[in-house]
Amino acid sequence: MRYENFQDTLEAFVGELESHGVVDILSGLFPIAPLVSRARMTKMSDRLEEPLRSFIKVFLVGEFISIERFAGTDFELLIPELVRQGILTYDSAELKIGTRGIVLMSVGGLLMFIEKPHYHPTLYYGDESFALLSRLQFFKGKRVLDLCCGPGAQGLSLAATNSHVTLSDVNPLAVALCEINATLNKLGNVDVLHSNVFDSVPKEASFDLIVCNPPLLPCPISVRFPFVGHGGDDGLRVTREVIEGLPEYLADGGSSYISSVLVMGGELDSIEKLRKMVRCSGMSVDVQITAKYRVDVEPGVLQMLAATASATNKNEYERNLEKMRGHFNRASARFLCPAILKLRKSRTTEKVQVADFSDDGTASLMWYL
Image (cartoon, rainbow, N blue to C red; front, side, top):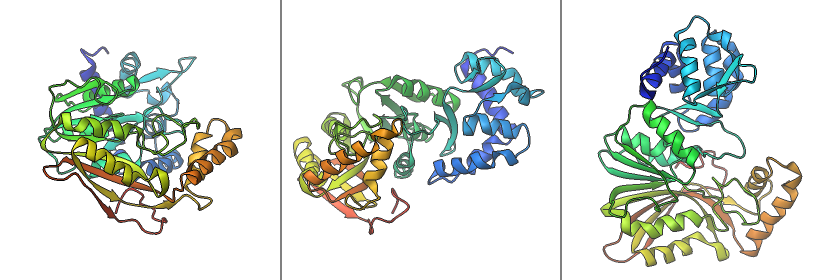
């Protein structure tokens, strides 16, 4: 069967997902930490009956499955089209199908393809993506810019509320996936740009809301950390660029929300750096700290960072851990703190206002109050 265009192909695809119960499964994933729910689904998929089991394994788990498992379904007729459009691919013998490293998620009532979770992602999508989106649920009908958009979770969810959204990412793969997700959800009120932060955003553009989930983890430059998470020595490498551009692109009365991991204490102290940034940009920032993790507690946050950096080469773990310890010890840093930044143009005095909702660092809901 040959469909007229990509939109028709994806519409038929969604119809198959609905008819076989896949959408119901996606809607049942734990909304605060969907990646945890996904791991559970991987273990439980073998309990399901066909063809639901195979749909789950291909589109939620990311496995290759024999084409014969879909025999007799309308989806079988869709497979060649989805391969042609780059959603699916065959194995070497063309007896099995799987996705090109992507899986499906349900995000705020939308279906979205994201990169299959692994230790060295190139199209990041994590729990702070959901946490940032939860802060945006009351914005409707706005002019929105989503920077570092990845697969488009924040921006496309806002587009579904009648906002006109421009999405931007430096990674061409993220741009392509974001365009697929917009088509998948029939969202025509979006523009997707291949851009490093504001570089390709039209100079005359103005936005009521600018959101960004940037690379945000403080990490020594000498450590090879996944680029989607590497925020530089202080975690503010990309955030700094965003704040510098806000005065030009943020409309009067507008707001900007940025996810962040702040360093507390010593030479890397993020609050002091934010004060300098807002003085230069004419902005005010409200900082909502949601958790606080001591860098001198082991095992702890530094071990997590070193393990992520060493995921593809376990022999590098001890070396990376020593670099992490040395980096934060030399700077006399005390805590790493997940936080959400809200920025606005200041009509009076530029200021940084901090609301610290953290406990003793044992909170399981890292990005939530």
